[in-house]
Length: 328
Image (tube, rainbow, N blue to C red; front, side, top):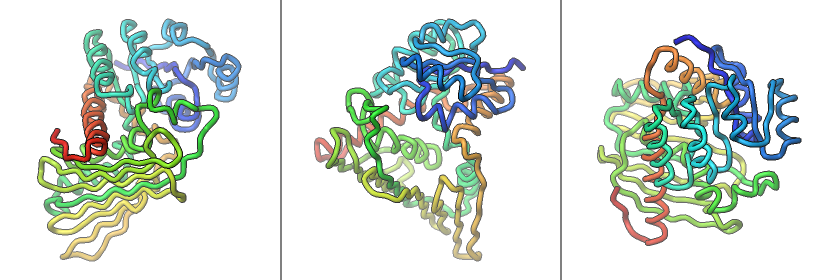
């Protein structure tokens, strides 16, 4: 199957503007042909700035565009499900932004709807496909640090309320705060690199918004390894570190975003590695989608991955609210 993917974007906002839209337009075998935003003037401005041929102010019109054969859903989280329900009967490829709905029930429904219509559904957990992540996965599979016994994730950034995206600080519209909006990537990467989670304990708090701003979670994996997930959106500058400790050594991505990785083993000198990365975050994921579509392979990140991440997210929120340990 060699047809070019001709994308339409539902929700032409900040993420589509800088992280995904340019990837959809530039990756070989992919073309951005239409965009939609409820504010017609902003939809037109986006289209003109990115040289997109058509723009719409309602999702249904974009979905029905005969040239569009792939739909990227980047709308507010509480609109993911209704937009998937509109798009799935048209049997077009769907790329849905994480976290995919606002609950595990919505993620399950999205997955079930796409399965019912035979839709090729992809979840935008794009960090899986960065070169630094793939190198970490290879090193783990090769036993470079032995059996992983502990993992630590530290993310800090400073979130300023965005008047153009008020839904981000609404729990009913976003499904959560730091854990959902940024932490979901790390929840997904813990599963991707280390396997399934068995138990969680957690504390979540906020001083500025109704959503969680700071999270400290302890995860026990099915492998027996322990993982610590520490996230705050109340402290600059940005830090995104993952540190994996094993029985033979450790590896540390001092900045996953920058592609910096250090490998330390007891029987070898330290190795510092750098993996230059396309500054458009979704580039590698879009390339994977194109390749899988052409080869007739399954989705590189199917709907079940969103469901699994949401189960962990909801368990963390529940553990914090009930001040107890939750078994998945």
